[in-house]
Image (cartoon, rainbow, N blue to C red; front, side, top):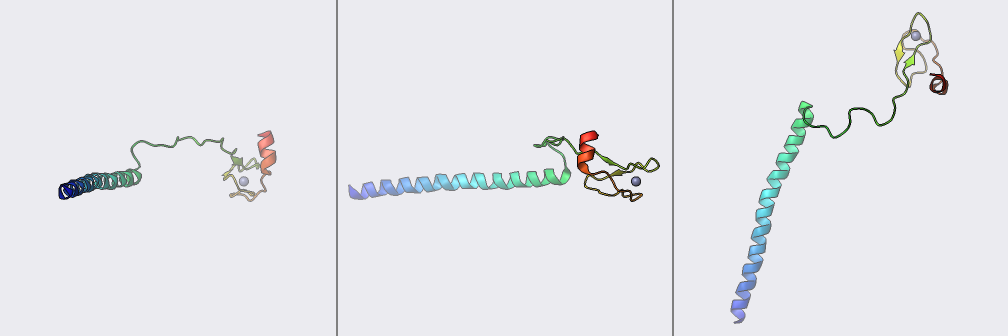
Length: 98
Ligand SMILES: [Zn+2]
């Protein structure tokens, strides 16, 4: 009687181990395939995008050079024009008026 109970217990434990092993055998390749698909999608640049294309906050106004003969479009953090070297307006003045 005790031997039969021990056998049943061993069968239960072995069955649980087999189920867990089978789950691992299914899940691990699935995770590898998902990772490879994500890498491929990132490399090819196609597929669905999770982030919106537009930035969430409004972009800073372009830093257009004030010189009438220049008008160069500088990057946002620029303090001087990249083309003619004219000092650009401070950011607060640009934001308030334009
Ligand atoms: Zn300029």
